[in-house]
Image (cartoon, rainbow, N blue to C red):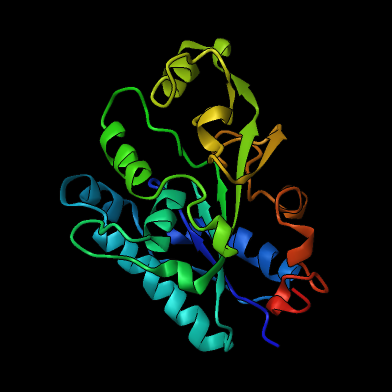
Length: 239
């Protein structure tokens, strides 16, 4: 029996090193090896012009390394912010994306997204890329096949608190006077068909305050009990 490794895919403004603390906590909490995909802000910037193929390649490479080193057959993906969108493309499905068909769902047991903007924005530069992902790979696409989806949203800052926060939220929803993690509103971060979890007092990133990966207490609020040592889904034992 092999404990399924964890692969973290970071957001558009974060370097892989930003997730070192979260990776350490997850390693202790899950009893698994934890890898961070080597995705950089430069990759994301290029992706808006050239497509996100390079991002998905880095996710695939991290999954390859994790499986090779562990002997397991599947990984648990953790996508923070836009990293959750890259995970959904890697998981893939029948329609091709960027001329290539992805089938990562065969190597993923669970996808956990943290503050990921899943909802198609009403307008703006993200409307096209996110809308395309939702058109090709809607909701918890492989849920019926056993792939677990958990989408986590932070609720720490109301859009009515300042014009800056309201405008951030209106990049993803029409009415920015709602609750969110300071960047992504709660409603946009909950993937249709997935398990959902809303965490009070959790911000989008460390620059804004206490965030999804701050420490063991924060991570423990969203990391599933059954993915901890002795849980039913560890190494598929008893499942």
